[in-house]
Length: 490
Ligand SMILES: *Cc1c(COP(=O)(O)O)cnc(C)c1O
Image 1 (tube, protein in one colour):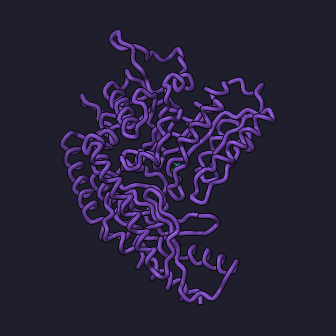
Image 2: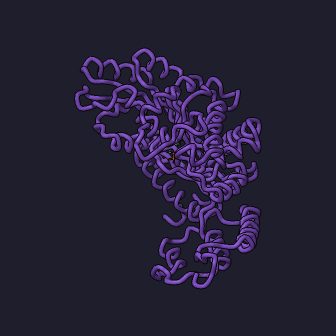
Image 3: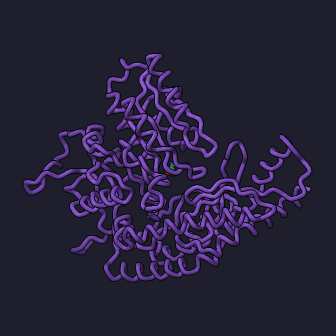
């Protein structure tokens, strides 16, 4: 800085430097996206090897050339990552990222609004508000609901859970009767964390069994609520799932809504994965009742193909959401701008400073509209059904379930002489080993589930790059892996 009128901050780049680096990086990203299908889904390298790539050095004392740094880092990531944007990635529920979302992230970071307060993020706050309204509209939820974008499904479910607790129980919990809530055994593990986080007893969760189609059994639910009431406990919340994480099962939501209405309980729906499939007219019956939920969690980083992270929580009564999270400390002055009342997202959720995660979601919604999403979600579901059918036809594969865009299946060798428990244990272990082999092989990526006690392989298509050809290749890949594992075992 000495002798100069302008400050020379080490991190700063001139406009020309930024332009050149940015063009180079975008060039490399475009090349990477174009060559995704030819790359392995993952290299399956051991952690020690990945660590070696970074070196063991201490924090660098001095800086490096930004151009070299970006080029080297892009190469490092392109050569050693698992690509959920790969057309043959069907593990867990992580979608391929919409290209406009990738660019949107860059734009959001460039402006860097703090979407905690309207004052600090005028356009960004309005874009988030509109995004929430459109998301609600897309799934048939009331457009005047309260809502907030969060990091993902876990956080979105926490928002619904805490709002339920506040609305139905209040803060004076010590004097209350023993609280209880109801959830299917198929509920995602966010529920364990929520119970811990919000200070409930582990026993507060009444685990309701699922039927043979893995949907919550409402007959058992009714009995359990009655029993708890009779024992002078305090039921306050029922959780329904719209697309379970294991198999995509949708609970009987309309019946759950009736039961909640009858007993004056909060109805929360975890639609992190499946809720957006309600955009399809042909799914109207399946999702009937979801629009009656008091709160709904749904993940734009799943079926809206937003780059990580983007989850969303919607609450039917916006005032209840506000009452749960709104405080007015003396050091914030966020209520009015130019004489008009404004709402700040800090009053609707757990975060204080907040990034502009709405932009990537909003851009994608505007780029393709409702019809674009209908087409992509419908195609994903059809591809999962196609997979189920071709597996069902294959003599050495057993198709197990197909709901929404998740198909579960397993390898069952033709000449298996075992029976009973020995056969079950053998098949579980065999398919476990096949999964490891498949995941390390990098030709396609699936995950696993436990369905009625059986260990199964699981393909979840939340991927606009997957083609019919990709799907048709999977049975052959699995059978080949099965043969190789069998050979290795014998
Ligand atoms: C994915 C998922 C979650 C967790 O969401 P994250 O975005 O991973 O935090 C919760 N519930 C269901 C049903 C899910 O599919």
